[in-house]
Length: 247
Image (tube, rainbow, N blue to C red):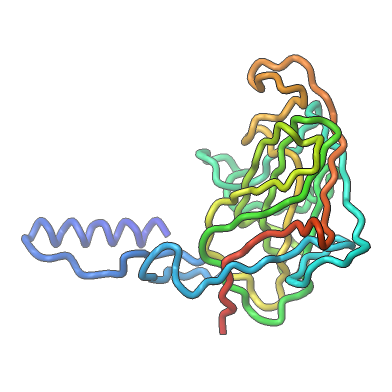
């Protein structure tokens, strides 16, 4: 990706130096991950990508169908003394754990919930703004909700696509947490699966929530919390993806 960007910058600069008009190009060029190609678009967000809800469902499933009426909430315990670690993602770092990273070990932790679609029978292209609505309750008023979108290949290897976090101050009441993830341009290939992770942190990329309301940089007391994620017709937790199904 860096080579193409540099070449285009040089071509643009050389044309100006010669007193020439630089070659016209589309207003927006994106590298579509998963497809591995640069594509031109007329605007952001690109036209033709409609928001589609992928609902959290019982049995760690993810689907466009709404959840059933008898769906019980899922739970996990978040302990800031052993915070859910950051693994991959958009970070101003050259560390090995930045960018796209295998999520297998992280998803095996008991403080990470996962919800996964069935195997895709055709490519699903996601380009634009990504968000999630998570119906959430904690045993403490102070809690974070971290949501990550992942791609699971034919061998079961999960890699991160984009993510986001929101901090709550009334989490001990049932809350609809609206989480804005990083925008993305990604093609989930036929034979892969789409996965969503739910947890309460990504340390040290995001400073851990001590659960007390204290300033995170100076907190001295750490309190563990029991978290619940709801997914029933009245509380339909979902990730919202801008989707166009590719031919």
